[in-house]
Amino acid sequence: MNTASRSGSAEDYEQIAQAIAFIRDNAVLQPSLEQIASHVGLSSWHFQRKFRAWVGVSPKRFLEFLTVQHAKELLDKSASVLDAALDLGLSGPGRLHDQFVSIEAVTPGQYKQLGSGLEICYGIHPSPFGLMFLALTDKGICELAFGSMEVLDREVKDMERRWPAARVSHAPQHTAPTAGRLFSSSSREQAGYEAGFQLFVKGTNFQVNVWRALLRIPEGALVSYKQLAQMTANPSAIRATASAVGANPVSYLIPCHRILRTSGELGGYHWGVERKRALIAWDSARAESVSEAGLAQ
Image (cartoon, rainbow, N blue to C red; front, top):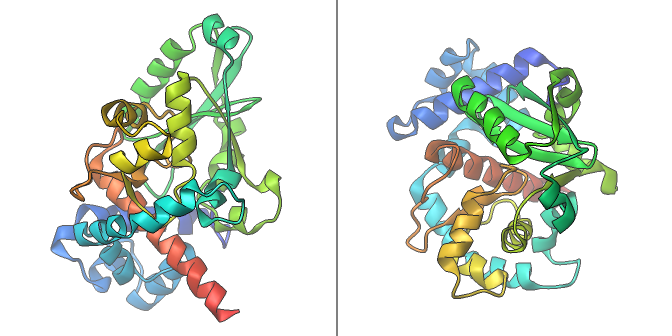
């Protein structure tokens, strides 16, 4: 598999994934640099250097991003994020992810055909957030999920029920190149539309509109369900908006992890609340790394 690594080393990729899982699972205990490094079999110096090269921040900083307080601070800043996301100009920061990820929804006719004539190949691959299920069509990614092998086996069965007339095949060798690009910073550093990801999703018009709105929330930002409903011009449909968020078929790329309750609580997450916390921390790390790189220029 072509893994998402700056060094191209599969071993590096696995070590960083193990480190993130360890930090996430033990965040309450505030593990030291030495404890994290020992868990992945590296010296503290070597691990810190490798982690920063991959994630963009130090392990200590990543641990800070995992806190509830950090999430609440991001939510407190969400008013300006919402203003940017509602800006129709392409220069707004809220449109960056929108341009990086493109959504095509099935047509009403295709919806009724239940995937007839569609070929879907899928694979299960490692990721910084545990095992990842990825399904592709010739039109783009149709499903992405995280979890244990047991959970992902259920995702495969659920996908087959959602697309009953499609031809589904297990083809990890075909999905591996896309899986390898998902968490690579180089994908975003490359210029041009082709550096991004195309999605092909099945949902109601309301759901697709909510998913498109999610793309307008930039990395390192969080908004509430109420604010998301405002972004779709349905301010009173908060419950329906939350249901649409929960029905998101493409985790991470359609960033439903960037939605919190108005109180600042994480709320639910189909692939696990702790994984949601780790994804928020990953976003914050990437955003801070990009900001520091810009200041250094």
